[in-house]
Image 1 (tube, rainbow, N blue to C red):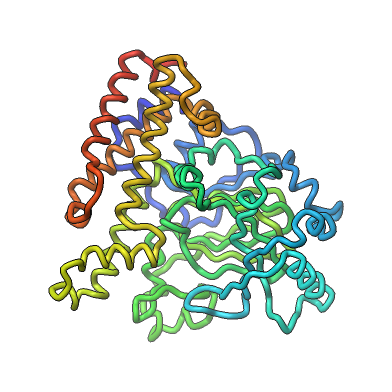
Image 2: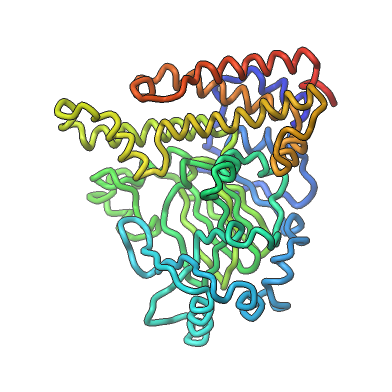
Length: 427
């Protein structure tokens, strides 16, 4: 982030997101086929929460695009088997429905590749159904491979920064599936951003701007499993479906990267045999959307078990437990998430002030140095804003937790002290 971008953002409390009406009336999305500065991406896509597509120029040097793909642009099964043969991988069955998703099993990678080859030979048909390797933590399983590099535009990634610090999980995935495999209608975890790069093959994306999904709920308030199903147009099942705009349809070619903004519900099809790399990520531009999502999740849980509110002394704690089981996080962990993000940036800015670059981890220093001190200060301001909201939240105040007031004051002190030395305004 440059100086001007920081000055434009430093006074923001609520991120000013523009209307999504343009995406309801137009079926065009910005296509980026040449150099784009990070400040422009930040201003044009991250802040307003708008999608875009990057050309294959941005992935042409990735090892996986050379090593995992044949000269004909197909998955290179032989090379993939040599690298990952015995590795257990998660595989979904696209022909089966389990709630609003596809059931998964774990199988050896070589078994999935054998299935895939037979599926192709049988004219894309198999008694096993249409299997799709998805949500595989390949980078975590094989950290030495380095087959791709996260584009600079997506490096302000609080979500994976947090999970890397805990060393227990991440939100970096590899997907591999035959023509016809697909992912049902959904919005991404915690209402995060996502970026998805096609290593080979083609995908069709159907995207709905935030808010449009409310028109697609059935009479029970549930979202559809398949947004292209004919039953969507049955007014007795989906009474408001006619009010929804047509989805933004994007055909993603081999090598291209799609940026999917926060809260955009989508459904995705593999039009060919496809391999893709996907990251979910969060940062200061959409952490407020995550916080709103968490409040909505807790509210839903509270409504479900409201009849027991007066009979349980620990009712509020039980709501948090159920919320974490359903969504993957509770208020206490959200506060821990914010603390780790803030601590890293305060350490970074204070190290710059003292001239000692050895006090923060190397993998973090690379990202923070690339984005610069203005971005670190912006991040701290966004954390501070969310902490202020937490301190006013009755459900949060009921929980046992470390005092966020101390962290909030530390953030304010750091921003003030580093600004005083003009670190935030250097070119």
